[in-house]
Length: 197
Image (tube, rainbow, N blue to C red):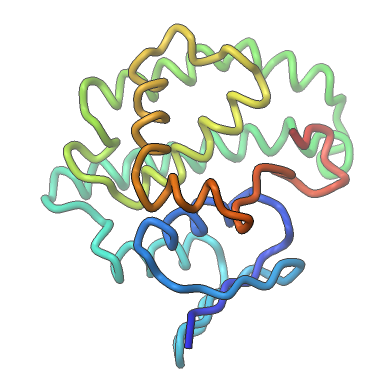
């Protein structure tokens, strides 16, 4: 029996989980318009980050060395900080009761510095942890894909991030998943978001 993944019919924090499941070749049934959860036999997990970490351990995506594990943890923490900042833009009006246009301008002004920090961290490595793909790559790729939709051309000054995204998309299991009907290109956020791709 396949595992079961429940999430709303949006990308947001479920898309990295979907990508990880595809990469790992794990058969999964997905129920959209559900509260986030993952069920595999007697294992039931709620919360997106807990699901990601379970799948990372299950599929050996935590890093092969302590150095890779540390790098993955550092950039995953940075991702959540960046995600919170981007959330304030996308949900400015509905959730935060602030002006979307102003928040968007502030975010776009800081985006080059944000991307530079990810670019510097990645350096010449193929993956954020180093030589091996880790759970953090699924979050970082997803975030960069959002930014490419939100601000087309934003990666132009960061060739290593462009190459990173292309390498991720070229992984055979990811390429297959992205070509399938299961892949969700949009929406990124819920219908009440100010920006939704």
